[in-house]
Image (cartoon, rainbow, N blue to C red; front, side):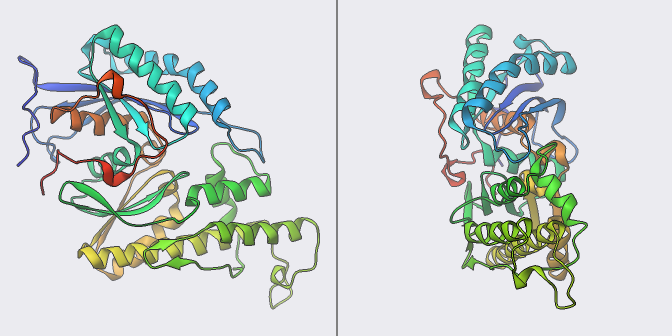
Length: 370
């Protein structure tokens, strides 16, 4: 069994960590507490603060790195102050400051790590750079009490099917081009629907009103999948719909006209079916009956529903969290970073450079030995 308390400070029976997340348009600050001892259902991590602010652009527009970075710079100190007030702590009470080191958008990541470095030197507190995906996985495991699940990681920047083996989270399959969240967001821009609270959520709400399925390309390639061609295909359908161009795919066999809601419904059904397929294959490969869905798209209730049907057929269990923990947040970075810190890890100041490419399987998961 791994000893998580080899580096516990004398006279203390707990740990505090500050987590800073800013890899995309969500800026999150979280503060977490771990009690001494192994994390178990009877010794859970305590969320003391989980604060987030989102950079929202007008309908039909995405978020550019420079503008997102400006948003993060403007809000990061205010969110940290608010988190300290909510948690009733002072900066000097913290054991470690954790920050997202990658993957993500370069400029926003850089804006947040500057704040982390500054506080580290101001308060003389060590830093821990955290892999964004590891943060999602470990927070998901902690919240749901899942033991060793197959992990479906679905977000705006990543789509991966993952399983743990020998202190690594191994990637069994992934997107070959764009992530599923990016696919949904870009289609939302095509439709010029609101980005508030998020384009993916608004696609989901429109899909609930759809009833006619339009057949789309289905591009599973072994354990991987491709979504750029599907996006191009449905973008062309939307263009024809908006410009009243004749297209037999935009009329049902009964003569009913296809709507934007039908297109959203069809896109979700197609993409989620692909995800369910590769997840089931990964479950069979590692002989697991648990699935944990993490990442922003994991909030989608239709995805959870479709996955639950498959998992039930395998007599398994599905785990997911709500938007507090699915969507990018600071508390997941604090939790994963604190796990690494408890194993003796810290990130020297000259190694805190952020990277846009940081693979999930690059991280040695020292805090697990199962």
